Image (cartoon, rainbow over all chains, first blue to last red):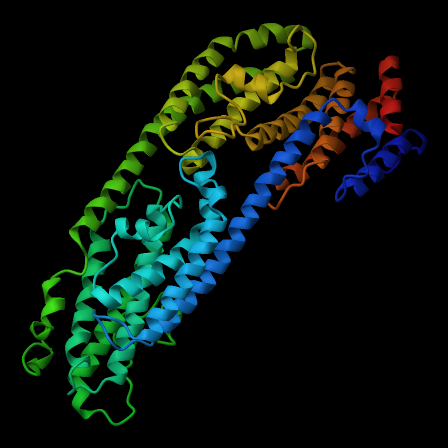
Length: 284
Length: 260
């Protein structure tokens, strides 16, 4: 409206400017305006309640990040294990025990914000989910190293402090990532264990068999209709690639193993289908 | 890789590991599949109610949208004609609430929150148009909305179906958007008073929203848009006052509001 005369417009301008400054502070509200505004008392109550909600959410997000970091360290340590399907070396047990107790303390600190049975039990599920998945990846890896088996959902729930919900999505997330860890371990073992000695030759196929069973297990689940959706599809793709990489590495061992020069490292990536998710494990 | 170099056959696996023939306990498959199935069954049940709610909301909204083209005097009759669908909707919401209350509220609330917001918008818009006793421009409180829909509001101490503050606020923003359209259409209908009423109402709500400390979420994004509606309504008011079309009593009220 370019041709407006100034006079009637001025009050509007003032109002505009006033509101322009309002955005980031509460002080702009003059007592008079507050008194005249019938909605203010109601919105003040809403503000307090929303503030509480945001505080809770932030606490949960922070704990989730810390739990993720601790779990990653735990996994790094476990990747150094060379003794499969039995008691783990002391340095691993010590590290696992220490970090698990730290993680439990973190879970406990946000327990009031998540306790199952109360209204908010699932409100921050999305915010804690990252931490839970990483933690599950760590403890299921530990469980696999000792027993050679997949952690059940009951065991997974039991490993969390009471009151922390384990959703099926988080269980899946953790187990999918476990497959990646097992793959890394398998490749490392193939790369570092001479074929003719016991260990590599025998146990790698057990790992490969396990990966195949896990893959078949996830393939056989009917996940349609539930809340799992796209995330699962994506992770399934990554997992298939993982299994194929190990298959390729074992093949390389069998075919060229006896011919390999000192320092030769199997390259699984060339044998699998490649593609998605490969980068994620390139450092394996 | 099948014929020679047989020392790598899995049969050589050490006995302890071999005992665990499968790495995946059958229990896992059963419990996981059971949970997935339960989840999808519940979703299907809820979707049935949401489908009805969606249809009801469309019927109500098609009636209420006539508010843009009929004079204020015809509104009571218009709103009255929605009552039977509102009643029907209340029953559906009751069924939804009953089914959903068996599960943790926040686990599934994203499934129905959209439809609940639509339902809330419909009742507050209807009330705005005719008021409790014929006086336009009322905002229903969250408690009144809960009563109208037959569901508890802002529950904190137990896990049950309810209307949240966020849902109520979202619906208020939808109301603001609808009113900015109504301000324009009021003028077309020759009603120069209603834009003044809308202007005051929306400005008050706009400054009320400013007291909320919103984080980067959907509510924040939508509430940031309120100012454009405020501007649209102010333009209508400006055009009217420029041409002395504003009823004189209202000019004073608006003038004071501008200075306050």
